[in-house]
Image 1 (cartoon, chains in turn brown, green):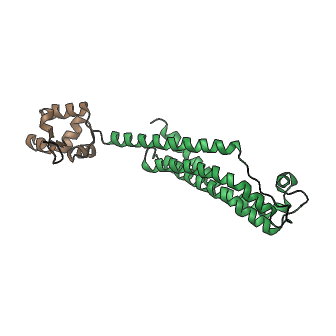
Image 2 (cartoon, rainbow over the protein chains, first blue to last red; image 1 turned 120 degrees about the horizontal axis):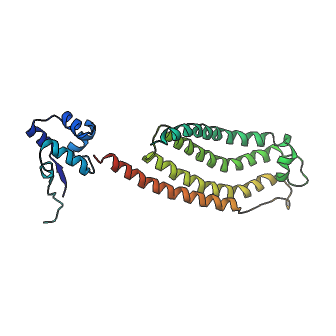
Image 3 (tube, rainbow over the protein chains, first blue to last red; image 1 turned 30 degrees about the vertical axis):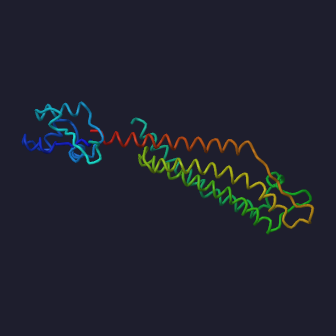
Length: 73
Length: 177
């Protein structure tokens, strides 16, 4: 069950740039890019909370659990 | 991270010291056996077979060859230490390269114990080559130092495994946003 990060979609919906989000959340653009590209191994609750607060959304709007072909039916 | 400048500073120094040892060991070996017959008796006495006051060139060359076995392992150890402290000097603390250095250091210590164990019989043979039959020697010995070296080698290997765990934690930490 891989977790997909839909941050790009939320940024487009809210018409917010990555730079603005990074500054508002207090992380570097490089780290935000790691998060957006799905390379991150974990996300802190404090980061998630800051993102949700800034984008006015819930964690489920950003993180999505997808089925992989290896998952049992 | 307050320790990082101190680690870098000290590591730069230790990197140079390891480099110094790296080259002084073979140089020392060559000089020792080249000028063996001119050295004070206090240095050469324990190695000379009774009745001999000088060593012929063949014996000295063979002794040097025997000495280069542990010397080579020691050089490998110091080369590894120089690389490790070089990484620390650059601020690289928990990386795969550091882990490899610790692993190689552990292996170098184990090889060192084996090399010093083999050095004793090889040296005794090299010293007595050319002696009449019945006066040739073969000495075998196990020193407590060799056991301590094996212990230190195993400790270094365990440290390398712990370092590998630290590396994976740091990698995970770096990818935690």
